[in-house]
Image 1 (cartoon, rainbow, N blue to C red):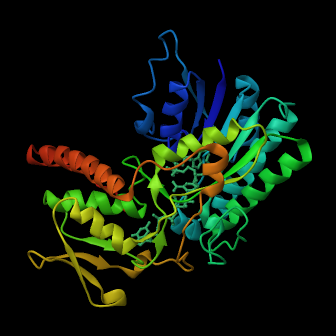
Image 2: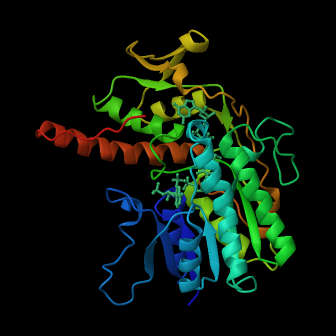
Image 3: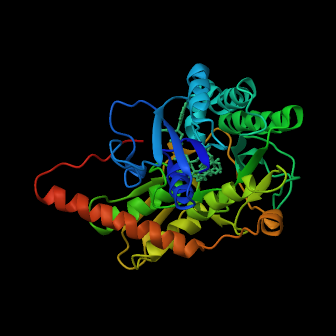
Length: 361
Ligand code: NDP
Ligand code: GDR
């Protein structure tokens, strides 16, 4: 039985990848951080009681900032494949915590690769690095492909740039089977609530049920190539099944603005959004009732923005046989449906006197 180790298993991609690898018959090990509350909600359905037999998903406490801990876990597990998905993954937050972001996202990558080398696993353990379309940053060429020059525009992207190149370097220097997946934005009902698509679909559901009045957003003009996370984790696995390690762009080849996604999401509940005004005064109005549903709040603007992302997944299609299956409309639909289910539960609780935690940004 093959063994995989996933860092960031409690995140969106970790949850989809763990499920995918378990279905493929892997023994899956995951690294989770110690938190003051339970933090395994996304994978609870996959975790068996540890006292049962045939437990194929095992969790270890750890952190990408702690090298000795990573070495111990890798030594114990002896994985055939490591998927490094852990990161401080929020671009806006990286401007607030740049040093921590560099420590976990840049040096964390180095720590894992060094662990493979120190433990003599260079021939055995294949390594996947969660690289990102944020590397392209300021537009140099469109659509963006494996050979497009990088121009990072945030502490997050700069940290991931180090992660990208140190992965290439360990591949070339020590013959480690190491691949960068340069993944464009991918979303799902499991997406963190502070990323823009989920923030939008969650607001749409809560507005529909009367739990929220308005949605406040930052830059409505930026364009992203949004795919479905469930499709993208398959590409991660495919990269590690090739004869030789290479880097791949994973994208849909279509791009939409934040404004477009707002319209799409409200369409799912039968509301047409009409835009009025400009810049910070722009508002999104329900064309049926005239109610203002969307406002711009400059606090969500970033010091430097990535304006336009559009990926060219030709190499992945030709070499991995990978292509995205879920369209942007299906994606918006599945996210709004799930957020409606959650909002209905919240409303039921509220109507029965239980206050629901709403989180803060
Ligand atoms: P999430 O933010 O949903 O998940 C991040 C995971 O990393 C969580 O499990 C989190 O743990 C864990 N983590 C954060 N910091 C540390 C640390 N210091 N030590 C150990 N674990 C840590 O991200 P996604 O699932 O969306 O993304 C997965 C990876 O892919 C990330 O590296 C991201 O940067 C990258 N990426 C994502 C894209 C996307 O569109 N989703 C596109 C391109 C790249 P906890 O649950 O405790 O917070
Ligand atoms: P991104 O995703 O920065 O592309 O990084 P995010 O969803 O945070 O932002 C996308 C675009 O939407 C604009 N925006 C807002 N963003 C957020 N979060 N909140 C808002 O209110 C808002 N209003 C407008 C942003 O300015 C931006 O232009 C994601 C992460 O998953 C990274 O880890 C990953 O590497 C990249 O995708 C590819």
